[in-house]
Structure formats: structure tokens, C-alpha cells
Amino acid sequence: MSWIEHLVVTELGWLFRQQETADFGIDAQLEIVDSETSKATGRLIGVQIKSGLSYFGRPSDAGWWFGCSAEHTSYWVGHSLPVVVMLYHPTEKMVYWQHVNEQTVQSTGKHAKIQIPRLQSLTSHSTQVLRSVARSVSEVPALEDWAFAPPTGEPQRAAYFEHLLSARLCAMVPGVVVDKNQFDGPWDLNLWVMDGALSGEIGVRLALQGSPSGVQRIATEYRSSFSPLVIFYTGTRAIGKVAQRSGGDGTPPVYVVAWRENGVGKALQDAIVDAIQWAKKGSVFRA
Image 1 (tube, helix red, strand yellow):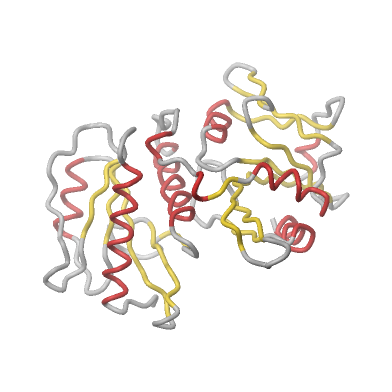
Image 2: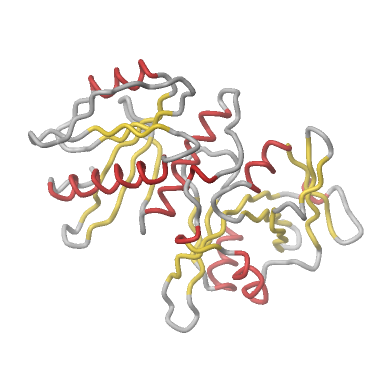
């Protein structure tokens, strides 16, 4: 992935952000930088990256066929960000790409294929067409607007929601970093936001839970002296009322947000904003 990052930064002059969390097929995000002001624009592209000669083993008249599952293409086409597939040719040190949409995806039943054009290599000349593909953060639809259902199997469902939450937060909060929890604890992800006034990073913990009883258990048992917790409920059963802590007594608040086809976008944003504000007041720093 380092060569693709090199081309994005040096040839396009854009930002490259690798996705640190396990996901359902998005390896990085590109953000367009204004060439005149050198400022990030907030216009984003999700990228699926593949490297190796094996990905160039199915030639087509105009390039190569990239094969994948229908589940993946459905996810990419319905993603909140536009998605491009990038193939790195290690011998040529060239990167070829294609925008994933309903016109470029060809179904083969349970699988699908996408033609990667030979003429569509990643160079400085790619900026104009990729700029038209990119989407502004303000244009990213709320999760409730997604026109597809999450996968039903495990661990696909868990990976789906982990990436969904990570990607949405990256689009929602400027400069956010989301990484996996590497320590013991009932949460899955950590959210970090740099705070210039504090000369440190603000931390919020994120838990994904698929059962109502699991949500209740985590909300009741969670103990921390400084980090707020946001629980993202991914189950299909009605969750009922869950006791949430407000943080008014000085203990970190606990928020519960349920994934639904309507209403989760605003609820998630409100919870994250409140959690970050509480963490700032408590002067929470990344250990």
C-alpha cells in the first residue's frame, strides 16, 4: 500500500488515510486537497487496494477483470462514500483504478467482476476525473439512507458494522482517528481527536453489541475514570429501554445508539459530539 500512498501524495497532492480497523473491503480514504490553498477540502473517496501479479491474470480487451463477491460490490455501490478499486502492478510499479458503480459492476451470479482499464493509471492526470468522483462530507448520506441491508453471517456482520461505524465517524468528525482496542475491556474501538488547546488527544471508547442483554450489561458494568463510552447496538431485536449515564456526577457518560434504517445518523452524531465535549471538559489524553 506504500506505493499507492506515495502516488496519491506526490502525484495527486492529496491526503491518504489508511483504515486501521478491520472492515468489509475499504482499505483507505483519499481526501482532495485544494491545489491553490493547499487545504483539505473534505471531499472523500473510499479505496479498495489489491497488490500483486495475480490480479492481472484475467486480461480483457481494454485492461483486466477484477473478480469479487456480489456481497462486496453491493457494499461498495451502496457505501456512504464513492469507492474505487486500485490494483498495484509490482513489476511495472503502476497503479490502475476503476470507480465502482452500477455501470462498472458486472454480475456473474454469486460473484461479480469489474473491468480495470489499462488506460486508467494513477498519475497526476487522474486528478480531474477522480475529483469528479469524490464526495463532500456534507453530501455523505446518513446511515438511514443506505439502500441495502447488512450481511447476516458472522464474522461478516461484525466486520461490516465495525467498518461502517469507523467510516461514518471519519466523515463526521474532522481529524478523527479510529483504531481497534488492544487491551482488556468491553469496548471494541477507540476514537481519538486532537485538541490543540489541550496539546493532546481526546479519547472516546466505542462498543459494538448485537444483543439487548449485552448492551444492558456493558452499560451497567462499564467503569472508567475518564473515558466516555458509546455503545452501537447492531442487533435486529427491539432493544427496549437501556439505562444510560449522563456523566453529570463526574463519572464518564454512557450512550446507546441503535442501528436502524431510520434515525441512526443524527443519534450517532449527537452521542459522539456529547462524548467528545465531555472528554474535553475532563481533559482526557491518550495514554
